[in-house]
Image 1 (spheres, rainbow, N blue to C red):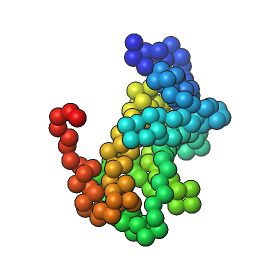
Image 2: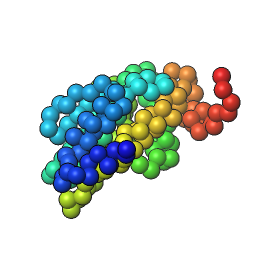
Image 3: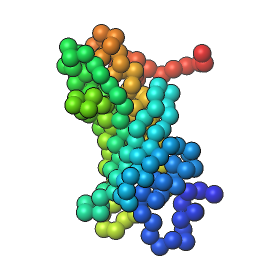
Image 4: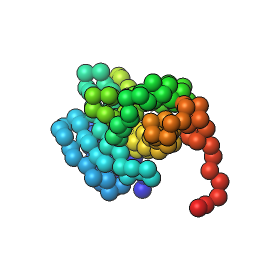
Length: 167
């Protein structure tokens, strides 16, 4: 049974209720912060990502923020910003930013549901998986620039390289 089929009999479902159901289905740790917000931990290959989704009825937007700790040395910040710009040029469904005060790398995306639109569970599931996929894909590039002394161009070669075979 698809996620959507479980909701067909209900007239209108709150987007955060859908996210909570998805978190339960995927067995992710989560905390329903409030009626309009949920926070969860999603395990990736490189690390566990903190994902928060929040519903704003005012602007009819479901916002997703995916974060992970990143504490680069101060002298590598210029390189980090360069690789951030390069990465964001390749991303269509969201963008990375670095929150220096919190020492967090952040992936942000907003799904606009104006005019009373509702998001289906598959859309929300795709939002979450796209965030994790982007974080996983570009995590090595961030690390290579911050800690490996690589340039943005060198780090991007690793991020965009296709892996073949199995280890």
